[in-house]
Image 1 (spheres, rainbow, N blue to C red):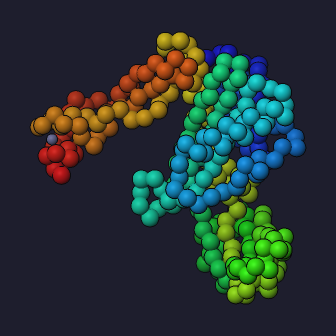
Image 2: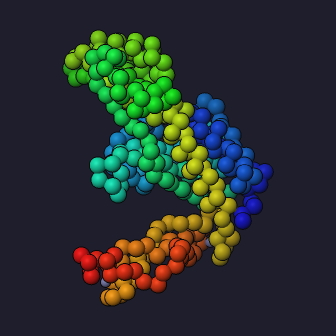
Image 3: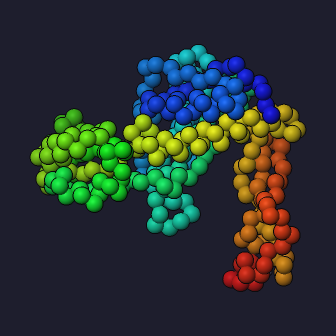
Length: 292
Ligand SMILES: [Zn+2]
Ligand SMILES: [Zn+2]
């Protein structure tokens, strides 16, 4: 186990209360303290988008965010997380959240990344004239336990380009009275008289997301605490699945995963870890050649 972070402090760049779940995980697994620098604007790096979930670009944004916190605090260790919501990367027609967290160490020149797919995220939207139409929608999105965002549904005319502040959405709505008022206002200014209601995905407004971030913080802390068997750097962990088990009949690679490839972020040492239960071969039914 890597002990090098015991008693050190990392800057966590967040405006959304993520320290409540990230700090305990880092302290428990690493003895690492976490502080959140005041007065930073992580929303400047962009808010939620609904495109295909891509780890690459999210990781870049998370690293930039971590460095904002490190600059603001003068610390050489930084943590940041990013969430994205869109079509599931493996399951068609299924929406999911991808949560990604980075740990940046400018002392050792390391970046350690962990990610998870949060399949229970209830990201939904409704378009209505009045709040009374939201009867089935509200329990589905766990309102008021989870907050909502209300915006005018249609603001297409050029006038809105000149008055963007008038079309602005109202976020963090957690009471029914507030919701009724926001829907009325948004409906009055929308060109079609309707309001668009979406789930507020900011971590402090969405307990489901906060739980996913807590789970991810533990996974990241455990990965950081895992030493490379070769160079003893922190952050040794899974980077991709290993090749599938060979087919019993033809010996070709099957669709049954045999294990994981673990890799060091410092020396690039790789090792294969077999998954349990250990089988030597896959049945021909799982072989794309024998059973196409
Ligand atoms: Zn086969
Ligand atoms: Zn190594």
